[in-house]
Amino acid sequence: MFKNDSNNVATCNKAIDSIKNASNFAKWSISIIDKYIGNNILEIGAGLGTFTDFFLQKKTVITTEIDNNCFAELLKKYDNNPKIKVINGDILDESFVEIIKRDNTDIDTVICFNVLEHIEDDLKAIGSMKKCLGKDGYIILRVPAFNLLYSNLDKNVGHFRRYSKKDISEKILFNGLEIVDLSYMDIVGFMAWFFLFKILRKESFASENQIGIYDKLVPLFSKIEKLIKYPFGLTLFAVCKKKET
Image 1 (cartoon, rainbow, N blue to C red):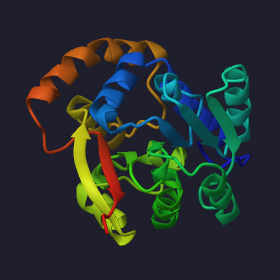
Image 2 (image 1 turned 180 degrees about the vertical axis):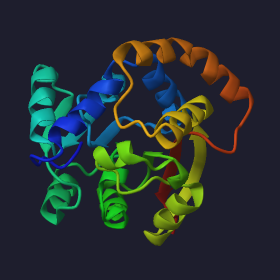
Image 3 (image 1 turned 135 degrees about the vertical axis):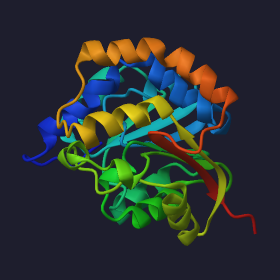
């Protein structure tokens, strides 16, 4: 999921570890964009496979990872699953994109969760995803919302930025894509993040117990947010597709 260098691998791996057991939160995320997910998926930056596990019933899944440690874990995890192809590569690498395009012409869904904020040239990254997408289908982005919330923790885990709807829309449209859906998620998380990381200026992740308690409350939060569309949240989803000619 993250660039593998000696300065940030441990921190980034801890970021992945902090959410890998939040199963309710992961299910909530998938439920928001499930209707856009097709049968031939390219996943950019799979981490430890937290979201990949939701795609096991699909026809094919190409899951990519730039971090060597996470890549090794993914290989072990999906070694016996013929539907899952694990690739070590960088979405900014033109030769990598060409290989994906050449060998997989029927990709109908590109999924990029919690990755774009780690890429300095996010404009190019979105453009590369567009190149990988087949004629029809969707690119689904999940990013942290609002630069207002940008904290030392964001910096520590390698976030270049957080996003508003305006920010992500401009970058999608710049790449000649059409926006299908934009939605914020997790208003409680927004308020908790603001308190912990902006007011108290904490720089460490919540403990497993704290994450576990929050995860148990997620079914309640998700039901409320399904009824009430809040104008902000901790996370932003953006769904886009190629423009029809």
